[in-house]
Structure formats: C-alpha cells, structure tokens
Image (tube, rainbow, N blue to C red; front, side, top):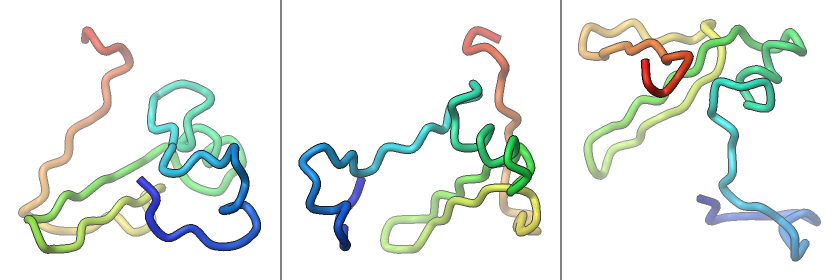
Length: 80
C-alpha cells in the first residue's frame, strides 16, 4: 500500500502503488536483486505488535539476530 507518493511518477495515471513481487519465480523482486548481484536470495518480513514498526529486508547482510524471531523457509511449490 502506498500512502505518501512524491515526484513525477506519483502523478501518472498508470502508477501502481504498493505492488511488490514477493513470489518465488524469476519476476519476483528477490530473484531480480539476486540476478543483478545486489542481494542474496533472502527476504525477511518482521511483523511487530500493533502500534509498533515492522520491517522488510532483502539479502542476508542485516539479518536480525534475535531469539524471539521464528524463521520459516519458503516452499518451492504452494502444495509442499
């Protein structure tokens, strides 16, 4: 979801706010970052309690080291 768009792209009628490919296929943002050597094939999304700030990160450079986080691997196929 986008809520504070600025600049020339924000005024385009075809602008797509809040769309980010987080799937496991080649068009996903994670795969594209890996293919360009920008980040490893790692994505993390930490959801915080209501009223707190969560975060989203790409690559494994800044993986939080906390015992309160649970890490779950992505499945290659939704069924398995």
